[in-house]
Amino acid sequence: MDSVVVKNSMGQPVGAAELDSVIIESAVTNRLLRDAYLMYEACRRQGTASVKTKGLIAGSKKKLFRQKGTGNARMGQKRTPLRRGGGNAFGKVTKDWSYRLPKKALRVATRMALVTRLKQGEISVVDQFNVVEPKTKIVAGLLKGFSVGTKSCLLVVGSYSRPMWLACRNIPGLTLTTSEWLNSYDILKNRVVLMTREAFDACLTRISA
Image (tube, rainbow, N blue to C red):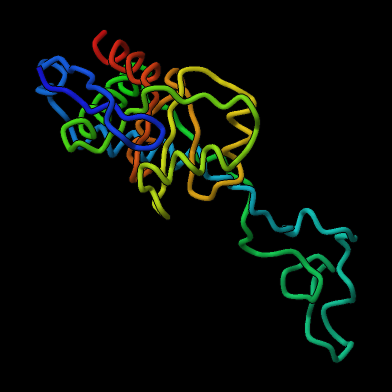
């Protein structure tokens, strides 16, 4: 049995959490982790860039003047891309970039991401950490105790709490999530992973199933 050191909110060791060797020795597929990461990135992409094409410009389709005899260059309708104020010839349109991998594949990717971080010793467990008042300095003190500094950090708690969310939202580089909504993208994107003991036990139960 391997173990993970459990610390208090000041970063001092207070115990250890045991890990099943089966979890540590489970296989990790880098291709699946990459596919899951790219899927979450694609779903975050907005794709809202849009410009007006010839069909969206206001104006008549009538030819402005006759083809010959005026001394001007031949010209069609007012909305043509060749005229000032006309539509864009090959403009961007709104596009949905999102797609979904199978649910089972995403669950396996989350388990692999957790196993990878556990093998590398990059997951820190906090014994007890509750925020009753929405004060940023409480969470900032926790990050200082674990020497997070300017690194991107993922804080995983057992359940949603509005005071906790209000206390975390003003800290740059900090992502707050629960054990239920934890995914491989958040685990791989952030350099530091902090978990409460409640969330850690819930995640172990989740990846052992």
